[in-house]
Amino acid sequence: MPNINSVALEKMMRKRNMLFKHQLSNLVGVSYTRLCEVMSGDDPEVDEQILDQLCAGLECDRSELICE
Image 1: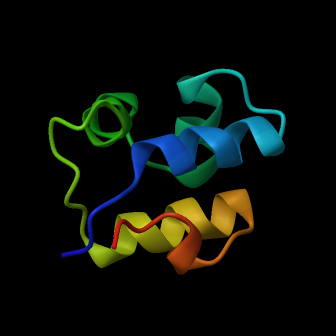
Image 2: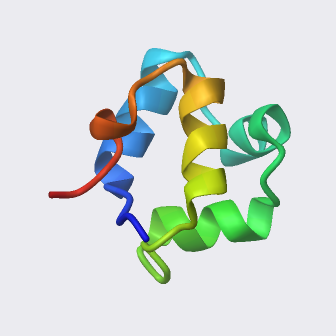
């Protein structure tokens, strides 16, 4: 499972004019609670489906959100 870079995710949200997590949650179909876990670093490992949903919603490439 890939690790999400929460800082990169927040930057991508701002780039897309999303100020609130619930906006992203509603856009990509991931629960607000799950999104908060990923962004807070409590559970940075996400399954491929969530990563794909985030990338589709934010119109970005997987490499822009994954920690190396």
